Structure formats: structure tokens, C-alpha cells
Amino acid sequence: MGIFGRKSDDTTEAGAGADLAALTGDYTIDPAHSTLGFVARHAMVTNVKGSFQEFEGTLHLDGSDPAKSTASLDIQMASITTGSPDRDGHLKSADFFKTDEFPTMTFRSTKAEALGDEDYRITGDLTILGVTKPVTIDLEFNGAAKDPFGNERVGFEGKAEIKRSDWGVTWNAALETGGVLVSDKIKLNFDISAIKNA
Image 1 (cartoon, one colour):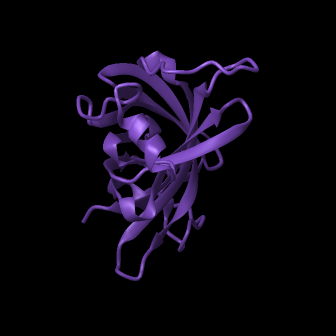
Image 2: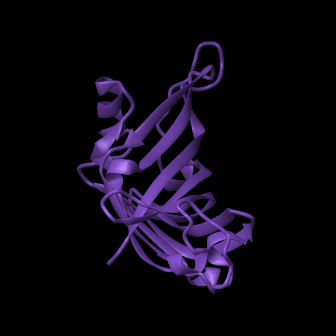
């Protein structure tokens, strides 16, 4: 059952050979080694990828009861980057995220589940533009290791899909050939490294 479900006498290795049950505890997400990304369809023909550069978050992992595992994340919306300064400026504007008025996007978990093997699912409340809606994230546990500085780390990859219109992000432009400039469906991608608190 992976990190959340194995008994303490399980000797299965994860990462640098850690006892998975021993990973129970509180963790701080390491922004320098984590990525919060997204993908949007542009002009119906290509994908535009972006990410947020400034964020902080915490995890609580429970090795005996997965339902008690939690996650919390705060993202600075003005740190959005897509590789185009003009596009980034538009995304920060009143057409999209209104970052002056709503500087932070937050996620607070409400439910955690072990799906088997190293797969998990976490459900929580995502708040954008002051609107809070539930979102479900599928996670894969990538392992655990002690880094050269003595930090105990865990890693997860995650993905989710949302409709931006559910949070009131509705700006768009029609194309002459039909369709719209920006897709409503947004794919979210997470690559998380978290350090166990001392």
C-alpha cells in the first residue's frame, strides 16, 4: 500500500531504504526542488505550459491512517510564468487572475486516500479569485531519501484537471476558424519534494 499503509515492520525499501512507516510526520515543501505547473490549449492547436515560481506548503503524512494525511499550499499568483512577458502580464490582469486584488491561490486538503501500490488521491478546496471549489489530485509516491545535508525528503508527482470557468476565469476570444483562443480545461502538474521537519 505504499507510504500511507504499510506496517512498521515492513522492510520494503523506498528511496534510500527508509522504513515507510517511519516517514510519518510533518514536512515542508521545498520550492527550490518542486514544480507547480499547468498546461492550457491555445488557439485549439497547441499547448502553452506555465508554472508558478513562488509558493509554500506543508504536508502531514500518516503511516497508519491515510485519511489523516493532509496538505496545504499557498501560491503567489504574480509569480506566474509562461515564457512570454506579455502573456504573463495579461494573465496577471483583470482579464484573468487580478493578482493585485487576489494575490494568493490556496489549496487545503479535505480527504486523502491510498489507491494501492504507490498511488494516492487527495481531495481539497482550491481557492482562486476568492472562489473556493473542490478539486481532486492523483498522486504517485516517488520515494524517500536522505540528502547530503541530512534532510529527510519525500517526493510526489501529481496531476489534476480543472475548468477555469468554475472559478470565474472566463476571458476568451473567438477564432475566425471556429473555437476559442484559450481552453476552459486546464491541466495541473505537480512535482513535489518535501523535507521532514526536525
